[in-house]
Image 1 (tube, helix red, strand yellow):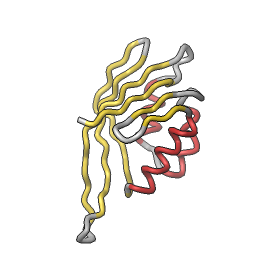
Image 2 (cartoon, rainbow, N blue to C red):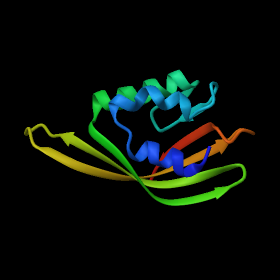
Image 3 (cartoon, helix red, strand yellow):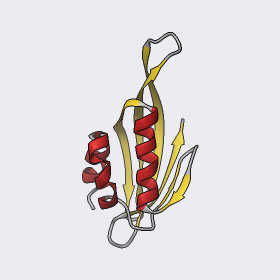
Image 4 (cartoon, rainbow, N blue to C red):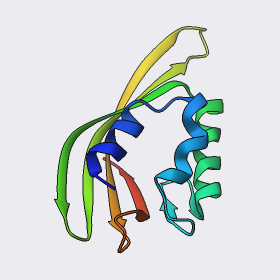
Amino acid sequence: MPLDTLVAFFETLDEARLGRLSEFYATDAWFQDPFNAVRGAAAIEGIFRHMFVQVDAPRFVVTERIVDARGAVLRHADFRHLALASGDIQCAATTVETYLTWNASGVPIKQIVQLD
């Protein structure tokens, strides 16, 4: 799978497209972020579904890529709209690094997300 295809999918990800996540991960893929550690495309989809419940209008913008035959590192901004106790909405951006490892077919089998 071309990295550009994966990046474009995540940069345009919305709740309606979550059902396509299994197209971008191996069936037994491993996903880890600061809050979760799961195996399987269905479990990964569950994490993203939960994100859309908890966060208003999240989006990802990839700003850097480092790629080799075994995988890639993506540096991206993770934008989230947060509802404050006052009722105001605030946009927060977090710099994130995602480490991807491919299988022999070029499909992600491991994804580790770290917050800067």
